Length: 185
Image (tube, rainbow, N blue to C red; front, side, top):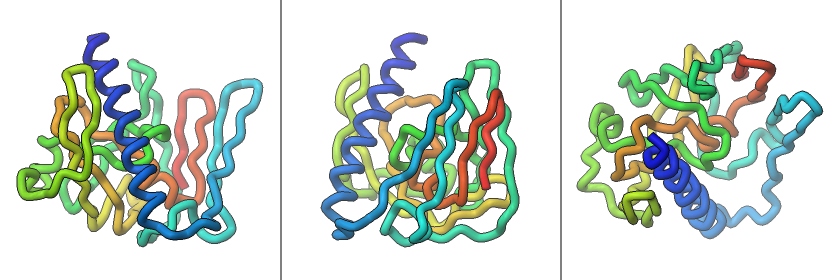
């Protein structure tokens, strides 16, 4: 269990670093605004959309308003039942991951031929280095909140669960955590 957790943590870190370096080379937007984050004495956090409509210069749009409340599970994580390109996928919400990270199993369930994707880098896990393959998802939806054009990476390792990262979350109006509830708007 600890080995799996450490492997997942290392994979998330590797993905975040790799994607950040790729994004900084490919966006060409030196004036991009960074996310505003806040912390208070009770450890709640909030992210808000910047005035220019998001933190990312990559294409993507949010359709539908509304609000989604996700409870914290017994393992202290927040999970979301998502629709990714029409397929139902349960993901762990991870605000520390810079990109949506899909397991091979979930990517194949969506219809992605993982072996035909070019390797975009390596993710370092407890089990060693594993290929990371980048892909653009047409649509990611959480209970009626849909984001189109979401960057993702397929990780060729047993992470156990796919991660709903900032390539989705940053396109929302707000992500708030209060107590044991995460609210997406």
